[in-house]
Length: 260
Ligand SMILES: Nc1ncnc2c1ncn2[C@@H]1O[C@H](COP(=O)(O)OP(=O)(O)OP(=O)(O)O)[C@@H](O)[C@H]1O
Ligand SMILES: [Mg+2]
Image (cartoon, rainbow, N blue to C red):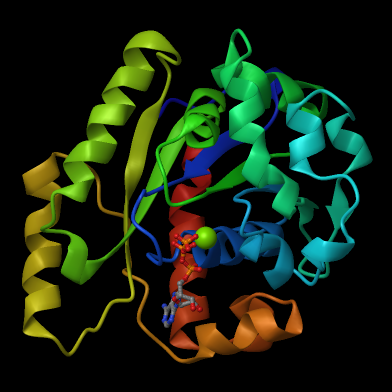
């Protein structure tokens, strides 16, 4: 990706994969905290009605009165729903209302552009905006891919050989043709990596070639620390500063800096 002009404001990166449980949300929270440690101004957007990102950053989705749902429907401005979190990042929270947003947007013109338009007024205040997508390729995910200049695809190593990647890449090709010429795949982020497994090692070395895509490095190791972090509303970078998972996310964030 060429460096963006400063005047445009934050680089917007979507973190998406229509497969569930591949560490999208964990990657958004951890990369967000890592970018903040590196002195970047970070905004995280929870675009999933399950609101796991919101919860994992210490905000109770049931207590959120105005969320990304209200922003997308044009009822409030994004700056009025932004929450400052302890990890040094700002969050646009989700709530269960978001489950009904797609149905409303479907009847609207330019429905794929509402997130991009909503982010515009705050874009200059941040260096990077990470969008956590739900496990689907619906209108909300299309909004993320339309607003973003880059896509990060988290994927467990065992899954790299599955057909799901092709489907996601078809969607990316459609988005590029019809909605957002600038969208680039920043890379596949190998997650839940078990370095002891020969299969994982083999798949990892093969994957970049197979899909003609960059593979981000290092892979994120599987560690129980990740399960503990959301319970206290902080990312693994704060709860387990020196764990190998935290170190891996820091390194990946550092490797992405030239692309911001
Ligand atoms: N490196 C890791 N090691 C161990 N567990 C992990 C790791 N990364 C994520 N997890 C766990 O895997 C589960 C799924 O992670 P996460 O919620 O980030 O995935 P997701 O892709 O956002 O899921 P969904 O598709 O439902 O939104 C969570 O319980 C999380 O704590
Ligand atoms: Mg998630």
